[in-house]
Amino acid sequence: MMRATVLATVDQALLSLLNFALALTLIRFASKEEYGLYAQLISLQSLFSPVHAGLFVSAYLALAPRMSSARALAYRNSMARAEIWISAGSAVLVALLTYFGARLFGGPLSWATVMAATAALVGLWWREFLRQTYFAGLQYRKALYVDVVYAVMTAIALALLIFNGTVNATTALWCMVAGAGAAAVLPVISMALA
Image (tube, rainbow, N blue to C red; front, side, top):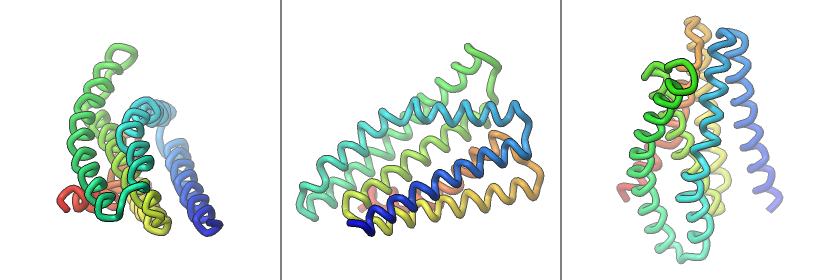
């Protein structure tokens, strides 16, 4: 049990360090306005993610450990299919709310920024779903592996932005999308197709 606790702690430290590095990169290489935009768009994840957690993560963590391994596998795969369809539908809703909410309460956002923020949110959802399926199956190393791949790919993309001098809120969000894509897209799709 101690080993699982250490792995979970390392996992959370890695994600916290990455988020801190993303914010520092924007503070250092982008304008105050871009950092503020990034901070606001990231805070929207806190608004939209509880619904996702309630539909998928909590349900999976509550039910899957009590099932036989064959039944848990079938349940995980059906949840992955639902994850794909519901997150796709939710992405449209989130994009529209973000775009029109920004127009209503402040300055308009470009569709590129809205798409980057929405894709980063969906990537977060898929990565979190994948991590929790591993945690429920007591596969702590696999959960850590998902976040290591996410962190490394996001950091590489961020380094490329710094090198090219193209750091802004939109490009930083696309870095998160690249990391989540590398870490979670293929495993979630393969679960859904199984």
